[in-house]
Length: 158
Image (cartoon, one colour):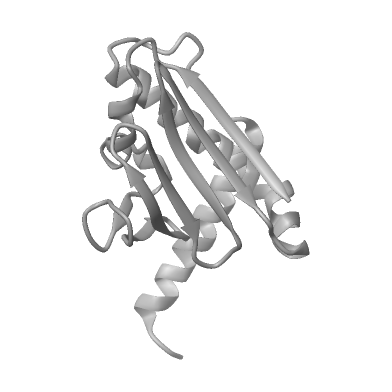
């Protein structure tokens, strides 16, 4: 079982930021898109990560269930605090990928999102997120892989 939690005090009521997740999503992590307006039943995600909205209470919380893994992630607000919690019951291979690669990318993405929330709240984050060398290396490696996949797709079958 994997449990990953991020919390940030925005200094202003956090509820409105739940609904602004798409607007404030950090572009460096792939556009967050859905097949319909954000709400229960909306299918989408960002980059290769796919999920479905399973619960949405405007101003309070939004929950998603992964479509290719067993797990959920929820963004919630309480007072001035915004919280993101990922819970996954992944198999061995997925847990290994999480431990070696995905966790670092996930953490960096969430911290970038929370920085955007703070900026939208009218203040600069006290300690803006910085990508670790591991995150930069993995993003660079995935960028090369993704670029090759796109080139192969455009070239068509051999």
